[in-house]
Image (cartoon, rainbow, N blue to C red; front, top):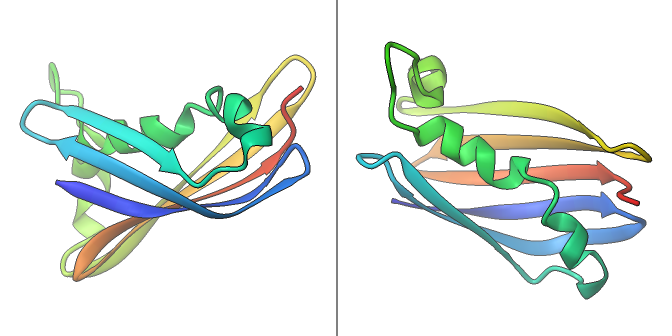
Amino acid sequence: MRLTGKVKGVLNGVALEDADLFSYIMPGDGRSYTAIAKIPVRVGYELQTVITLGTSIAWLFSVSSKGAPNGFTITGEIFPPFGSTSRSACIIFSSSQVLSQVSLSVIYFMTNDYYMKGCIQ
C-alpha cells in the first residue's frame, strides 16, 4: 500500500512548504518505509531526528502482538468510508523542542500530512 502526503511547517526558521511525503506499507508484515522529498538542504540533517515522521505510520499499520492492538485497530473505526485522525507529539531535545502533528485522512484514498514547528540545535 502506498501513502502520500505533505510535510509543512517551520524548522530552524526554514519554511517547509512543498516537501512530499511517501510511505510504502506492508500491513501483513507490519513493515513501513517513509521518505521525504523536496526538503530544503539547510534542514535535511535535522529532520533525521524527528522520528515521528515515520513512526506514526509504523504504529498505525504494525502487526498486533500479544494482544496489544496496533494503531489502526484503535483508530480504524472512524475511517470507513470517510474520516480522519490525528496524532501530536512534542519532541524535546536538551536545548530545544519540536512540535509535530500528523493527520491521516481517508476520502477515496489515504493521505498523510505532517505539520511541524520548532528548532533543533
